[in-house]
Image 1 (cartoon, helix red, strand yellow):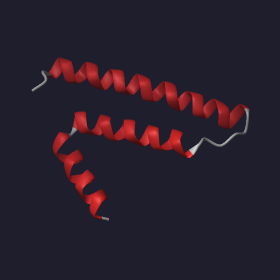
Image 2 (cartoon, one colour):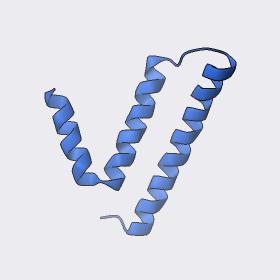
Image 3 (cartoon, one colour):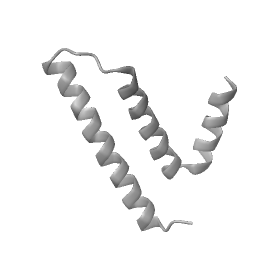
Image 4 (cartoon, one colour):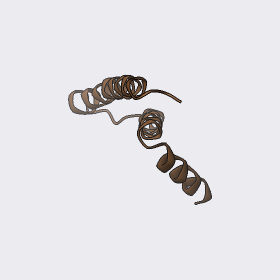
Length: 70
């Protein structure tokens, strides 16, 4: 099991990557008036789910199983 400091670093890393990706999407939408590709949105959602799994591991498992049954 990861220590608290390892989890914190993992969360920071995932947040930095997500923030970078969302900034790129935002820039294209606002400056180029181009909507993001569905794959980009899915990738951002996957990153958010991975972050949630680190922050709240039990809740993430429940939400994944709930989503797969819907």
